[in-house]
Amino acid sequence: MKDIVRILNNLANTHQIEYHYGKKAALNLLDSTLETDKIYLLHEFTNRKSSYNTSGTKIEAVDYEGKFFLVKHADFNQPYFAETGMPETSKYTTGIEPLIIIFSELGNSLACVQAEVSQWENIDVTDALDANMDGLLCTYKVRIPANYEQ
Image (cartoon, rainbow, N blue to C red):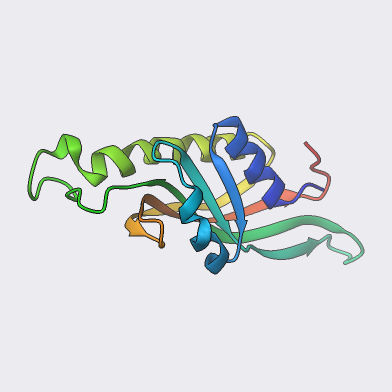
């Protein structure tokens, strides 16, 4: 069975997103390597729970629950929306709004790989982590069948 780490890594690669997996403290150390226009999927450690068949003799699926940042490097001095300028140059318009579209595309791609998605949510973030990143903090609950190998 393929694990959610490999599945999200493959989805990120398909969408030309740089993928990193680890604890939040380690993901926070990426600031020296970040490129301005690159999109990053920073996946924090995930929870795994095996689901057994009715007789309790075989794992049928694994339930994954976790979160990740879907972000881009940002300008700390940029306005959030239209506080001091035009919305077209804001953190929302340049950093968050395009990632909402990519988040939906990732969710649709995940649904196409035999996964049961019961939670696929996000919340806007600005100036996140030491690297000063704007984008989305995403949470998920996904069930992957034990026979999934793609």
